[in-house]
Image (tube, rainbow, N blue to C red; front, side, top):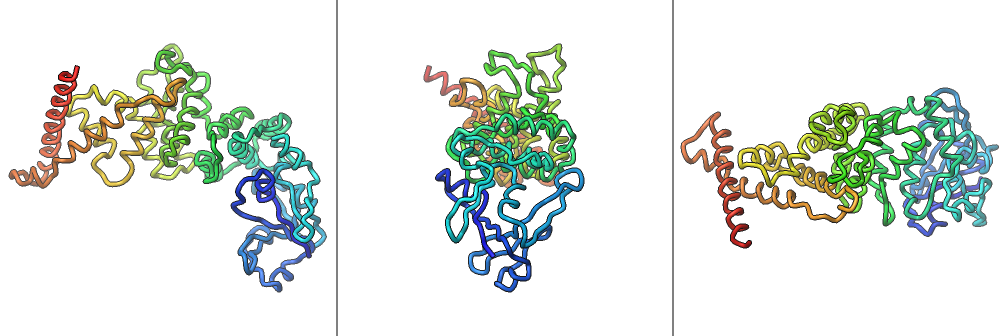
Length: 423
């Protein structure tokens, strides 16, 4: 019985990256021998065990055979006769198909993974790569993760990914798996290197045709022009890619990244004769955002923020022009007077929109401090104050809104007076 350190641990070690987790493959063993050695079984579909001391995963060497469509359509075989080379042959990329003998330290590299690491190439191990559509998503995620290190997807691998799409295999991906990989790509999976660009994930999916199949609302933005005076990058798809990269650079939370990704879906619904103008794209985008989130099972908190940002981002951009009553209504829709991070996250997503434009990556964005201050001013008026003036019952809400609007009007007037006095 021999064990080998495999996969990402070897890859990251050879790239001088931190090794987050270590996975092992055991050759020449049976489940009975593993149990007798004190390992604890955890695998459902194939034999995987936890080491009694370290808790690290140890899987019996196995092979797999395609038996049906999608990524569930596989039959696995694990037995003492399966070699480490057999096990490595089922892996997706050559850089993930390297093993180290735990006894001798020898690298087992039957598919040239070390050479591909040096060449900064993401290349599939074998034609069997095409049997698992999840690999399209995984390669796109690896492309994003390792792009800052100079990695690129091999042309033949990108072509094979396109063949998977053409064959309809990605249509069998369950929404939860699509979203899981998308979420990991948007967040950087918690270990993104400096210079990480989540946009590479979506651009890679688009390059092989998968984006149009699994996220057609997003794919439809590419090729849609915007007014050059507001969007020097012109292309609406390029704009949202820039927005999520800004969110990454600023370290914003995942809900903000999702909202930045989806905020402009309505531009794809603009009639072509109106291009490059996109009037009402905020309204047109709301049902598209809802449909996207429902289909891919996006968590409710992310969905709610994305819908509000799609609907309100134009109002946020022109917040400084709004009258007191309209400003108050916007603050309420942004949940400025509720507990939690929703208000700040909505502002952050709008900041990403403003900075996700060519040449505007570090621009000032006055609506954020303006709306924060407006919310603080309005919040100074509390319900107990209007109730102390004899208002009760159903009238409290309307009285509170009037009082807050009056406070905002006075604040706005004072601001204009101060600005005029400093000119």
